[in-house]
Amino acid sequence: MSTKTPATNALTKAGVPFETKEYDYTAGQSQIGLHAAEAIGMDPEKVLKTLMVEVDGKPACCVIPSDHSLSMKKVAAAFGGKSAHMMDPTKAERLTGYHTGGISPFGQRAHAPVAFEDTAMVHDRVVINGGKRGMMVLLAPADALKVTGGAAKPLIA
Image 1 (tube, rainbow, N blue to C red):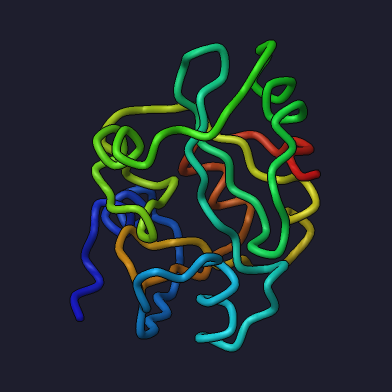
Image 2 (cartoon, rainbow, N blue to C red):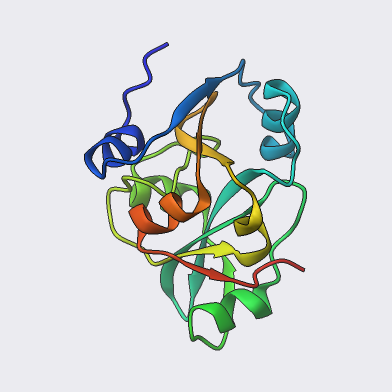
């Protein structure tokens, strides 16, 4: 399986050290992040899932531990809005250039502001989708923030 994606290209271009971790992606999983964590043998709190949302009608990207859920109230506050909701998967695919189950915060087709769950930033390394189903990247949280221009904010319920 090729590990070149817009996400890995963005990380390489930024000079960020990362490793790829691949696994057999199973379509139809209800909790893709937890499935990925189990498949690669990593703690779910270190395997982060990428969720596309809309805050006051504008796109935004949230990255949280795979064993947690978003608090829409906290998401709205994190992006300075009044209300937030999950983005329709078709719209998320069109905006990011990635398929659901393979959405990465790195190298998205259209820029959307990014927020990472602040409690996930305490780890030495985290795992985030690498831009395609079945491929993750392992990197330092500070590097993930740097590449996305993101901020660490409270996002989980």
